[in-house]
Length: 100
Image (cartoon, rainbow, N blue to C red):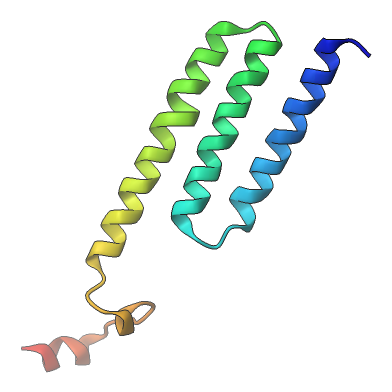
């Protein structure tokens, strides 16, 4: 096998491993970082395949912008939860009257 095919198969294996990590990691911030790693490996794969314009787009969007937006959204959602007991609880009309 030539060096091209070795690099190609290595990148494909790393993309699969990173995609499995995104799905399997329970921590949301860790999953966002695994998504960034997948975008980085896809960038490398596009460079190996000879598509530098696609690699540049993937680097900007898949490895930087998308995980950053996910991390910002995760941080904002976690900031809205007031206490550890409120996660997963739904507020009904009775709860609104009790807080007044």
